[in-house]
Amino acid sequence: MTKPISLRLPADISEELEKIANLIDRPKSYVIRKALENYLAEYVDYQIALDRLNDKDDAIISSDEMRAKFGL
Image (tube, rainbow, N blue to C red; front, top):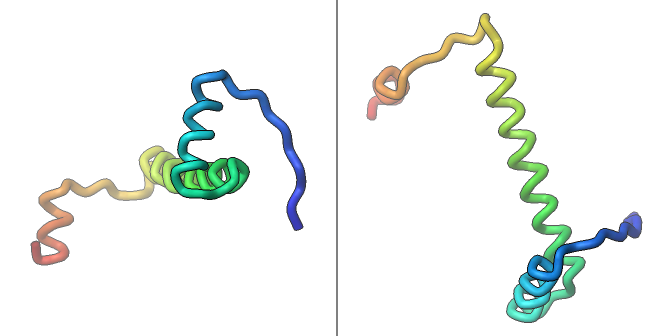
């Protein structure tokens, strides 16, 4: 089920949104939904990385150690 939401965008962002929607022949709501999905997925990954970085019990290894571990 979808829920309606409204938001105000600055003119320049609104114009860019319109261009992209026209370019891919999709509604603006589709572009906004996909952008939010990507942002939220990236944010979750970012938060996990921060949590691991701040976890004193989670060992941090160097890129050289990581490469050696995977035989690269």
